[in-house]
Length: 116
Image 1 (tube, rainbow, N blue to C red):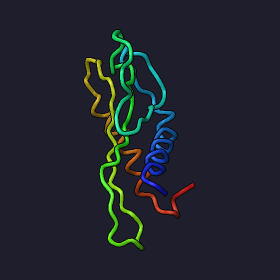
Image 2: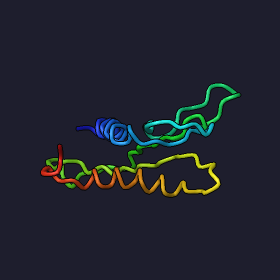
Image 3: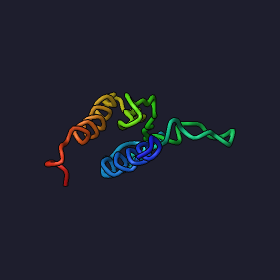
Image 4: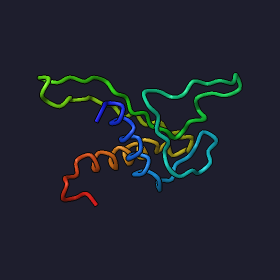
């Protein structure tokens, strides 16, 4: 698996994992799921658009990679960043972030015995 394959696989898996999660977009409307992007958000092409249109989202970044020897597999460091909108007066956006991180963290630590 190449680093790019890893990145694409992580995005697909996290999108599937969070597909039923209800969040709010920048307009305050309820939406289901979180869209994933490689490395960064897309460039804005129109002057009337801004990056708030992408909420909710996550970004999978490939940070580094190395291998101890040519005969051993590469170790690739990744970072997952989540972006949400929280305009509610209760300001509970941190709970939403904790929930998305918990879902992905728990999935990342499952063993083969726990995989469905």
